[in-house]
Length: 174
Image (cartoon, rainbow, N blue to C red; front, top):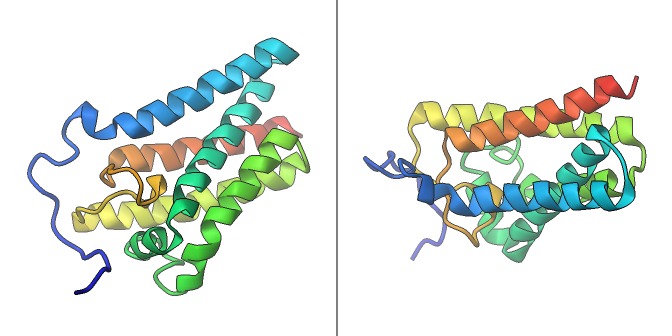
């Protein structure tokens, strides 16, 4: 029996309901609220909130991927332009995401963290666009293999949103 995920065309209504994305939305809301709580407790404005939000978001998503590195790597290789060519990238990616998340939370080398995030999210966006154009019906590896969320325009919006937020912070840093 082959344990690798396979390509298939998108089912008629898969990803068509808000409840299909509840795990993703709940993680985004929790990261946003955790960031808001820290900004409230420590003081700070929009830039601090974006740091905390990005930090919590990236760390939580990295954790979900690390739970099952093999499962994540298999799913990621189905659409990511680097992971298709180098399977090892699928194993390294969650740790890149974790390092970025910790970089945001610690405020270490912010411009470097912002630039790296822009690059990582841009590469991810290209892969998601390619998969969506092919009409692939796969679970979004962004949630690891733990949660069942379809790869969709919501995933695309997440990648673009994270990249855009990092780009805004990069411009604000100078």
